[in-house]
Image 1 (cartoon, rainbow, N blue to C red):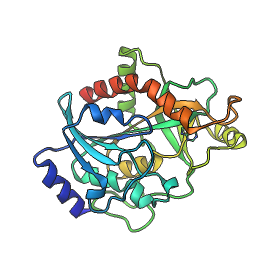
Image 2 (cartoon, helix red, strand yellow):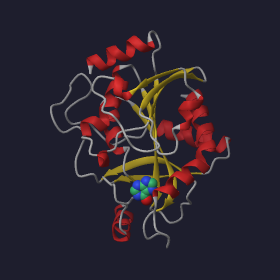
Image 3 (cartoon, rainbow, N blue to C red):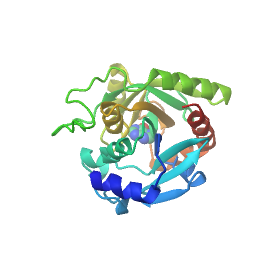
Image 4 (cartoon, helix red, strand yellow):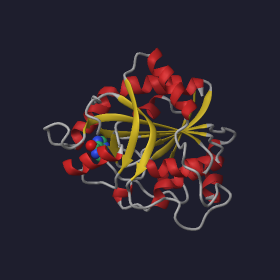
Length: 266
Ligand code: HPA
């Protein structure tokens, strides 16, 4: 980790990122528009090569609306076979670089049938249904404690700020609970009914590991889901990745506007 931080600092010199953003499926564009420096993951000590279609796999640094931002253009997914350590390592590195606020974005399926694909959902809480925890193993006391509190993973203040911003921009949004599964298969209708009973509003295959680690490491976290489809069984149509990408593409202009405004306010 020290090597990774040192390597990145050598590249970015006196640029000190305050805000980190993990850009989810179909939302990576934001980094292209605000980009002053790029470091491919493959060049950073400890980062694995990432190889999902539509994910570039690089850190992008930029000053946006007066704030220093580091963006992950592409993230590591557990379903790719990466360990939880690999999935969450970039969050730890961002923290060591000085990032205090982390915005985590994703594409998710709507478990609440009143939600409409194309809407954004601000994550109020999560259910970790991945069957493991990214903090298992030796605790790194330099980042956080052994048994970290998770009663407010997603900062209420940031959610308020996100709501105000969305309203000002007339962007449709919801708030709700995100349940994380490992994937890569989508859920069965019976699983979605179960998740609904358990209190979930949206389902996806990411975000929760990164959010747990960010909270543990003392960061303020905002989670934004782009609801790309109805979860299995909520509507009659079968699920496919193409639909996820198409909806994310349709929403991304609003999403980018919202992010830029939020950055200004944070
Ligand atoms: N399920 C899981 N992950 C997802 C979905 C879904 O319906 N949509 C986008 N990511």
